[in-house]
Amino acid sequence: MQAQRIAVVGAGAVGCYFGMRLAEAGHDVRFLMRRDYDAVKSGGLHLTSHLGDLSLDAPTVERTPEALAAHGPVDWVLVGLKATAIPDIPKLVGPLLSEDTRVLAIMNGLSVDEEIAAELPPGTSLFGGLGFIGVIRGEPGRILHQE
Image 1: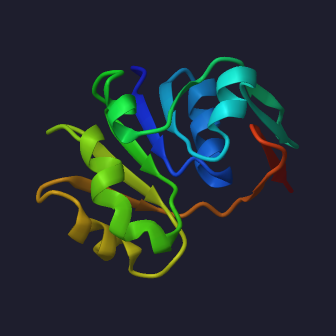
Image 2: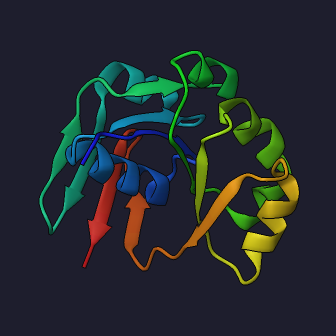
């Protein structure tokens, strides 16, 4: 399988977990971060998991979608935002989209796919996903995966 270029928007516990596992599988993953940006930029991103620990020592992280887009086009945008952030999707995801970019939303809530689709440009390929996973943020830059 050819490596995919993936932008993670909503790089909290869920977004970071899936983004890190995708990076572990050989994909080019980039993270849009706010709260943990400084810690991750200087110390990397670390996952403690019963399925195997993982560290990304120098992940690509940016504070703004425009800065993330400057790294080049992506094949996928993985959206791990809270449902309350759906109105922010145009400004967070828009700069990352090209004609061929697909969007995968891993979010809580019923009917969020329709709400997200309404915020994306017409014709954007949107896939809905469910992440039945127990993950929490630990210290900045650290994700804890629980059984």
